[in-house]
Length: 115
Image (cartoon, rainbow, N blue to C red):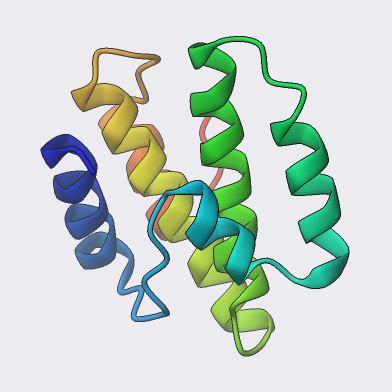
């Protein structure tokens, strides 16, 4: 796992207060954390990936789903999704990819809409 990803996760945990299960952003860990009904779709999609850009988006999507699937209740699920959104946004910014503004990240943390 890259240092940028680890920093993004740590910052997102602090910003959102997420205290849920730590699921590494890796195929094996994500697959193991998914509910059975999601697991089949995950591995089917994995088999269709054509390039590394698609793989990053795939990991981001399914890592978020794995966090949501691991939540104990609806409130924890919402917090897990907010945490994942912030972590992915911070990582994308650090890696030079699509950028979220600080206002957009703050809106995710606060649960407000950004225009």
